[in-house]
Length: 213
Image (cartoon, rainbow, N blue to C red; front, top):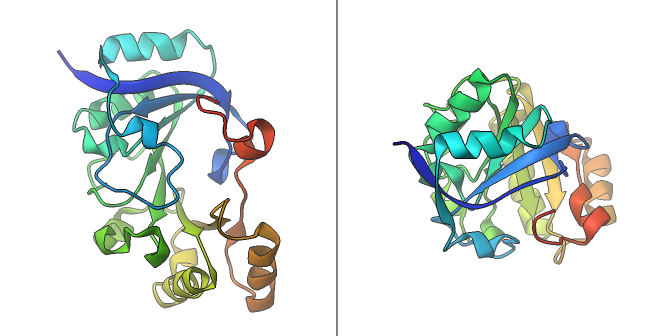
């Protein structure tokens, strides 16, 4: 029986990336190999409950919405996540995956919208970036940089320019909520004429980062 350890399944509004604003079912898997300094879902590192894949899908179906986001923790840390993604696509859902980029994405179902979080130096996890994943990013996917300070911004800008990331897919720059002022980040992007999309996390504005929303 295919099963995964699940922290929570809930219905809310997508707060970031290309599907921002859509009512979405979030399937949050338990566990993560990384420890980013700004992590706002550390409660998903441990615990959780084992659920059969069919039971997960049944709970998703109970919310009667077409958008599903599989997140964590790091969802790909559980090998059965790949089967879950494909099953949700087979059921006709518009599926997105939020991944930290430290695990190979080459086997992710091509129907899935991948949002890959490229870890910056100030996150504390930059050495764990699997840069080979960039070769598997589709034009319909997205890359996200969460920035903690100006040094992060300069580093991320260099990655975008030298790796020509904006030619691969949409690139999002987001300020770490407690560390970088959003207006300051917007000013830098405009000043440098970067081909990236500025984003703030809508769910934190709406619900002040309340867990399960």
